[in-house]
Length: 204
Image 1 (cartoon, rainbow, N blue to C red):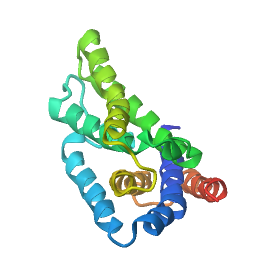
Image 2 (cartoon, rainbow, N blue to C red; image 1 turned 90 degrees about the vertical axis):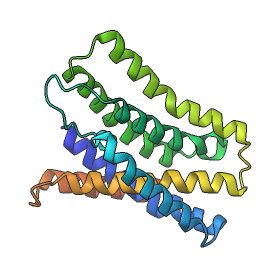
Image 3 (cartoon, rainbow, N blue to C red; image 1 turned 180 degrees about the vertical axis):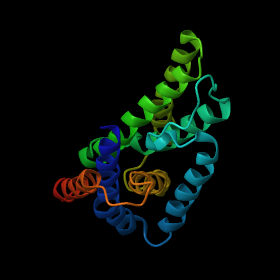
């Protein structure tokens, strides 16, 4: 069930990013915005060296294996960067984009909670870590508000490009990891196609 949700969410997020967000970004930011997209993509590559793939809902942990602080910090940085552009109401009111982000956030939170539980961490400390993680995106929004997000300004476009670059990495990784054995899986393939099709419908 979770893998199907991941496949659907990854395809929906990729569809919204490619058909809805990227064209607008390039239209408003020009060719130079590509540097920030690439920076976001590469930032996510580096963060995943510490995050154990939790961003795409995967749990790579053994019983009694505690969550390293570097993993929590990388997840918080990811959520913080993702939250910054949502300080601008036009982005926060973009239902397809917001839905895509939430569809990847839900499995991410479940995966983090699972890792904390399997790690044998005291419940008080585990809850503290979950609260810290859940506060990262709102803190990013607050930081964006402090910066003053001009709807057509370069700051918003760069923050948005960074976030979308990260999400492009995550969405494609989710789709590739949904079939790690590289075999055709009917239900997962259908989930990917449905996710992409709905993204096309709602993003236009």
